[in-house]
Length: 235
Image 1 (cartoon, rainbow, N blue to C red):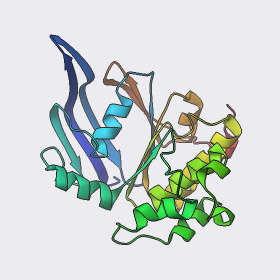
Image 2: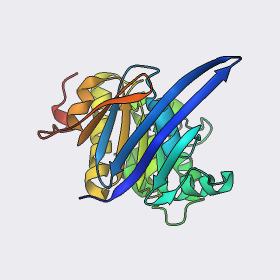
Image 3: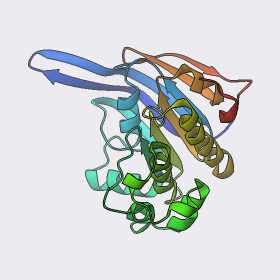
């Protein structure tokens, strides 16, 4: 069996307004494996992003336990979670979160300057086919190019985990497929455990496993026996 990278046990996330409690997560037990590409699928408000934020150390569960490679994250202090994010996790979001006053190279260097064993920014940008755009600013790039800069920034630290929240949500279908091809190549080439949140049911066809969410719970998990490549997807 592949190594378990993440394991959660009964995690909940509760938001309270006055006397009203809203369960963003309502008891999630999940294992994610080394080298897999997993897609979290479900409607808005089903708990996908909340789970991703907890796995990435951006948020804490209200109850339950979370492990990363056997190390419990649940009670880590803020400084410990910061080290965990810095050393192990790359994030890709729907909206690229690039610094507009910095070039592509400089945006990636924001990560490489604080990482233990980063790849050069130029190498990371070449991996996403942007070697000729190193010194361009975000305003000089298309949405797909900006998202690829964001991916280069995420992978430049050589993360074990890549967490992607709607990485194609702001892109047209052609550009979205180009971005998915990059994520697919990173997963294949480096064995990076990759978790992708999406509303787009077609993207599930390129995943090793599809985890369906509904009302803060996992409603189903299935394995793809006949995966498609990103370039074969038709939206």
